[in-house]
Image (cartoon, rainbow, N blue to C red; front, top):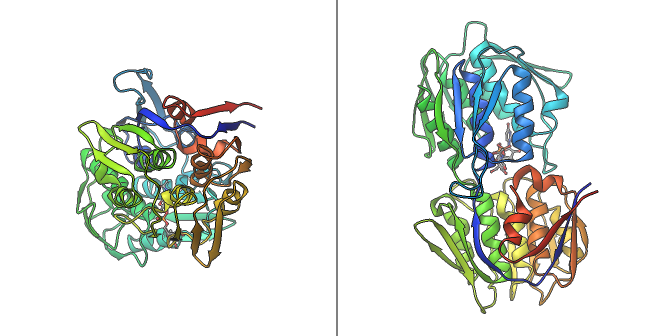
Length: 429
Ligand code: UD1
């Protein structure tokens, strides 16, 4: 199993190109199931989760082709991939595929909308809380689907098609919003979705669906209106830059000091996180080509945060921010409100010398003067990268195990960091 070895202490200086967003790419790829025409996605990141979803979609009959190789110039880290679901050959998504990635459960929406039937295993995915699927089931039922659960599978049918309706989400869910957008696009009549997720990835999906012929308005606000259409066509659409990758590298620079341009990053996708970083004493400067992040000399101020749905501070940056706060000059409070079990990085950060105590859903972080390298491992994607951030300043050697978590969501992590001066390398085996 691959490991990442880091020798801490180097500042980061240079340019880091930001990849296409994993969390936008996945629902966009799934949207290809809605049409027999070709959906071409630009700026698709090269990640283990994307590869896994390609396998899952292939099981339903989606063909794909990669246009253009990745070159280390110009549009550096992007690739363009076309997906065509000419015929859906299988409306079942089995446990052995869905259990590897929670987002693959979302195929339930397009399969049901296009084929009138879907049998999808209940999901697995990151070990961060129970993550139920009640909102998906209630939402699809509101569109007229009949749903039962047996042997760990969700069986959904809508023999005469889905029918538009009003549905109020009792809780904000990114995934359930994606699924309802896709399903309602092919439902008969109008659907009104209230208390929807406002994440940029939802807007990116809605824009793609509209390019395919859907009639969606209001994405990015709390209420979305969808006028159902009979069929959708192909389209060409661009994946937005990854705001979580952007925030992660911004925090890495805040941690090590130095001066880095996050090329292609868009500040409006993560304003809350950038504002928080500015309060720690980090300089954040939007430029024409991205976001410049620097910290020279001054210490890190402690800042309290609470994770919230967009536009609040993202839960997917909570672990990284905690990594940063381990070196602040004082005490910070980090409250997790989205997932109930998302503090697995705390024990591992402690192995590096961090002082963190948990009180319910709040972590109290006492900044320390220095961290010390150690072997660590993490059980989810964002937790793993928080250990990398801490390792970049920890004295001596930090070895991050279970690198496959990082490969799920960070494209060429060690290449991007070492390109800016970090001592980081992948050890295989
Ligand atoms: C997506 C992101 C993930 C991010 C999360 C929150 C992708 C691929 N993943 O995950 O990185 O951390 O949004 O920003 O885009 N919930 C229910 N019932 C449901 C569905 C969700 O109670 O049927 C709960 C969840 O347990 C959680 C909360 O709602 O507590 C938010 O989850 P949700 O927004 O659905 O997360 P995902 O879409 O899975």
